[in-house]
Amino acid sequence: MQSDIRRLSLILLFAPFALWIFLLIVLPHIGMIALSLREKVAPRVYEFGFGNYIDFIQEPIYWNTLLRTGSMSILVTFLALLIGFPIAYYIAKIAGQRSKGALFLLCLIPLWVSDLIRAFGWILLLRETGVASTFLQWTGAIDQPIEFLYNDITVVVGLVYTVILFMIVPLVSTLDGMDDAMVEAGYNLGGSGFTVLRRIIIPYAMPGIVSGCIVVFMLTAGSYLTPILLGGKNSSWFTEQIYDQFITRFNWESGAAFGFLLLAFTSLVVWLGLRLTGQTLANTVAKS
Amino acid sequence: MAKSASNKAFLLGYRLYIVAFFIFLAAPLVAAATFAFNDSLFPSLPWQGFTLDWFFNDTEPKLGMFHDRRLLRGLYYSAIIGVMVSGLSVFVGTTNAFLFVRGNFPAKNFFYIIMILPLVIPGVILGISILVMASNIANGVEDRFDYELEFLRPGILLVVLGQFSFVTTITSLVITARLKKFDYTMEEAALNLGASRAQVLRTVTLPFLRPAMIAAGIVAFLVSFENFNTTLFLVGSESPLTITMYDRMAKVGSTPVLNAVSFFLIVGSGLLALISVIVQRNAPAD
Image (cartoon, rainbow over all chains, first blue to last red; front, side, top):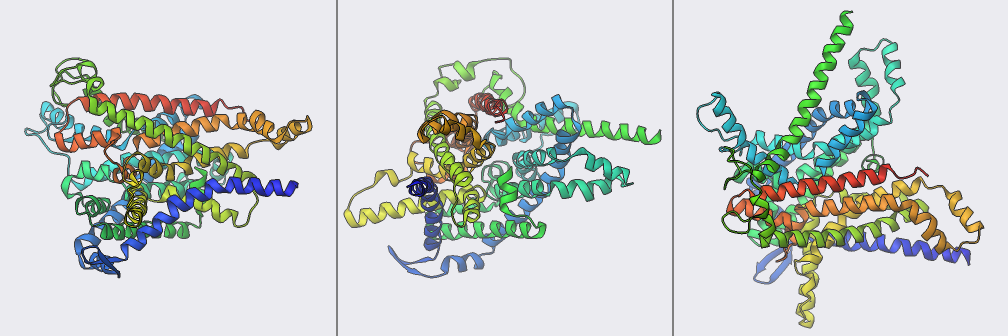
C-alpha cells in the first residue's frame, strides 16, 4: 500500500517533466532533423536526401558565416571572461560586506533588461548623429561626424556587453565560497600574486568559469538582435541566415538544416570545452 | 614600504577599473532612458529641454507611449504571455524539484542533465523546432480530416510554449536549490502530530518553498517579457512588445517614444528583479 502510493506519486511527478521534455524538446528536434533531410523534387513532392546539407557545403557564404559566428563567439566568450573575472573577484573577495551586496545587485538588475533596449542604447551612443560623435565634434577632436556602428569591433563590444553579466554572476557565486585562508596560505608559502591566481584561485573557480563560458558562448552564438542592430546588413551572423531561410525565403527544409548545424556546432564546442577542463554539465551550469 | 606603496597603487587601479566597468554597464541604459525626456522629434543631441510628452502626449507627431495603441497592445500581449509562462513554468518547476530531490528512479542523473539542456540550446532553434512541429501536426490534421487547428499556427499559444520550454529549466533550478535545504524532520514532526500528507504539503513544505517559487515566477516573467529569439519565429498577429519595438526600430526609424518605453521597461524590470532578490534573501534559512 505504502509503496503503491510512493510509485503513484513518482509517476505523477514524472508526468509533467516527461511531457515537457518530450513534447517541447525531443519531438520538435526530431521533427526539425527529419525536415532537414527532406528534398523538394516538385511542388508538394519531397524525398529523403542530404541535399540541404550539400547546399550548405557547396555555398561558401553559408559555411563562412557559421565559422565566423563560431570564431567571433569564442572571442566574445574569452573577452567576457577576461574582463569579467576581475570584477567578479572584486565583488566576491575585496569589496566590504555592504558594498558587496550593492555591487552584486547592480550586476543583477541590468541582466533582466532586454537585449533590444541595450542595443538601442548603443545605437543612440554610437551612430553618426549619436552622443559619442557629437561629443567628439564638440571637443574639437574630430571635425566631421563619425559612424561607429556597423563594424566588427562594435559588434564584439556590443556582444560582450550583452552577455558579460552571465559570466560575472556564476563567477561571484563560485568565488564567494572560497576560503580566504587558501589565498593567504599561498602567499605565506612564498607564492607571487600571479602564482596564487594560477595555482589556487583559478582552479577553485573552474566550475564557475566553465559554467559562465558555456552560457555566454551559447547566448552569443544564438544571438540575433545585437549583431543585426549593431552590425547592420553585413553582420553575417548565422542566426540571420536561419531567419532568412525560414521567414524571408520560406525554405523551411534548408532552414531546419541550418538550425541543426548551429546546434551541432555549438554542442561540439561546449562538449570540447567540458572535455578539456574535466567538468560536467551537472556541476557547472546547474549550479549557477 | 615600497611594496605597500605599489599595493596601494594596484588597489587604486583596480578600483578605477571597477568604476569604469560600471560606467560601461550603465552607459547604454542611461542613453536609452534619458532621451525619453528630450523635447525633440529624434532621440539624439542637442538637448532641447525637458518634456514628458513622450509618455503622455496624445497627438501626432509626438504621440506618447500611453496613447500609442500598438505599443500598448504589445505591452498587453507581453504581460499575458509572461503571466502564462510564469505560472506554467513555476508549476512544472515545482514538480521537477520534488521529482529530483525526493524521487528515486533509474537514470536520475541522466534525466537531470536532460532537464538542464534546454538552457544551452540556442533560443532560435527552440523557436524553429517548435514551429516545425506545430505546423506538421496542423498540416497533417488539415490534410486528413480537413479541419484547421488554428491554435497550432503561430500565435500566443506557440509563443507561450516556446518560452516555457526553456524557462522551466530556470524555475526548476531555483526551486530545487531551495527544496534541497529543507529539513525533513519538520515534515515528520507534522506527520507525527497527526497531519495528513496533503496537509503537510500545504502547511509545511509549500510555505517553505514559497520564496523560491515567487522569485522563480518573477524571473520567469522577466525572461519571457524580454525574450526575442524564440518569440520571433512563433509570433502571429498578436506581437508582444519586444517584437513591436524591433519592427519600429528597424523599419520606421525611432522617435523618442521608444526611449519612453525603454525607460518604463528598465525601471519596471529593475524593480521586479529587486523584489525577486529581496524575497529570496529574506527567506528563512530552514
